[in-house]
Image 1 (cartoon, rainbow, N blue to C red):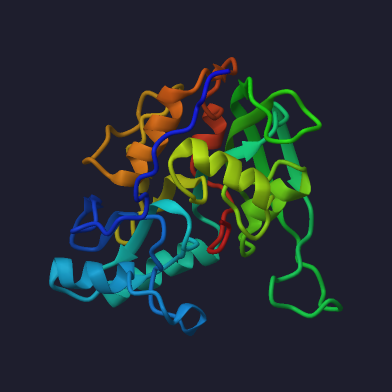
Image 2 (tube, rainbow, N blue to C red; image 1 turned 90 degrees about the horizontal axis):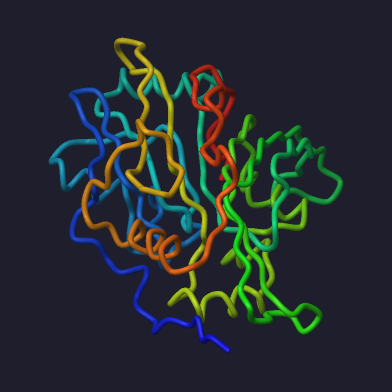
Length: 288
């Protein structure tokens, strides 16, 4: 039997500087590393890695957060460089004038395409709190089957690469919706399966959340022109207009190794549909 395990390496290593994807005098888009918080919070008092403070020191000027990514999620994050730009960008998120596109590695063979319309109660809300509407488009891009068993009930182990586009912005929405359809994100300690996460971590070289903020479409805070900002992850089947890798970013290296190491079967027209990449969607601040 083939042993697909890789020697461990420190996936969440400290980066000397944040990778800047695009910048002008009004905004900056960076790659947020997995394991970093966007800004300080009392909810994770022991953490020492913060995008906001690191970027402020790196650029030598104030930066203003306008949206968030979960600590475990890596990928495109935008910040404003002055108060007027912060107001404009915040309003774009508030008024659903942005679109967010994520890649997720999930358990099992996900359906080719599905809309998840499943209301969610805030994570920290009491059981009798009202639920909030939540909607996510999901599309399977590729499937994988390994000839090893992570579960004694099955002879093989399956996984899928999924494109997710949330059209509402509930906290942990993508993670919770994938759990709802029985395809939790691998490495999700809150909404996934611990034994399966550990099994995959042995083979992927370390524990991490396999959720990547690949592309963000947002109006420019001054001109209103649609900005198409992507992380540079060169996943197979990516649209031709996707950016090339900006630098050697450890998170992107993890994903590229994932694609290169395993015998993936990519679906026909595996890239997200053209209409899914056009402006005018409805994703809000806290989808992932």
